[in-house]
Image (tube, rainbow, N blue to C red; front, side):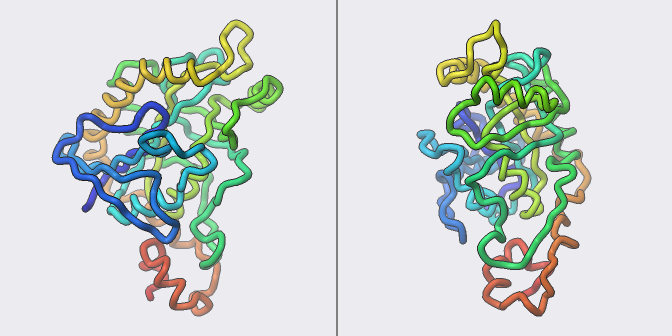
Length: 289
C-alpha cells in the first residue's frame, strides 16, 4: 500500500476514472479516520492515492473535513506530492468561470479548524510558510493544466473562508479591495498540514463563479457551482494525467521535504518517549524514539 501522488478531490471530483489496478484501503490515524476510504491505483505508471475531501457522498462540510487525518494518511502511504482540486469563486474580472488558477499565496480567514498536528500535544513546531505552495509542484501543475485546454492563471492569492455559507456582498468587496484573487473554503489548513508533514502541496483551483461582487453575474449558489463543475471536472482529470509525466522530471528533493529540520523549538530531551512514538511518522528522523 504505497503511492507517490496524493489527490484530494473537491466538490464534483469524487473519483478518478483513469486509475488502473485499483484497490481501496481504510486507514486509521492518531487523528481518526480520513474523509473516506482511499483509492489506490496506477496512472501512467505512477501509483496514486485518491481521497474525496468531503467524502463520496459529500458528507463533510468544509469546517468538519478531517484534514489532519487526511494528510497523515497520505504520509503513511509514502506520498511525496499532494494536489488539491478545489472549486473557487473569482474576485477578479479577468479570472472567469471555467478558468483554472494555480495559486501561489493564501490568506487564512478560518477560525474553527485545527491548524497543526501539534496543537494539543507534542513539541512546539514553527514551519516556514512564506511560500505556502511548493514552487516545483506548482510549476509542473501549471504546465499540465496548460496542456488540458482551459485558460490557466499561473499565480494568484486564495482567500480561505470558514464557510459553510458563501460571502456577503460587503465581504466579497472587502476581499477584492485587499487585492485577493480567488475565494474558497478548503486550502487551509491543508497547506499548513502539508508543510508540517513535509509533503509538496499545490492547489488546482477550478473557477465556478464570481462570488457575489459582480453586478452583472448571478450570485454564487450551489446550483451554479455544480453546473460549472460538471463542465470542467474532465479538464481537471486531463490535467492530473498530464501532471504524472511532469512529476517524473522533477528533482528528487526540495525544501518542502525538510521543512521540520529547523522548525522544532522544544529541546529534544524535553519531548517524552510516548510523544516521540506517537509522532514518529513526522518527527522520527529528527527526534528518534
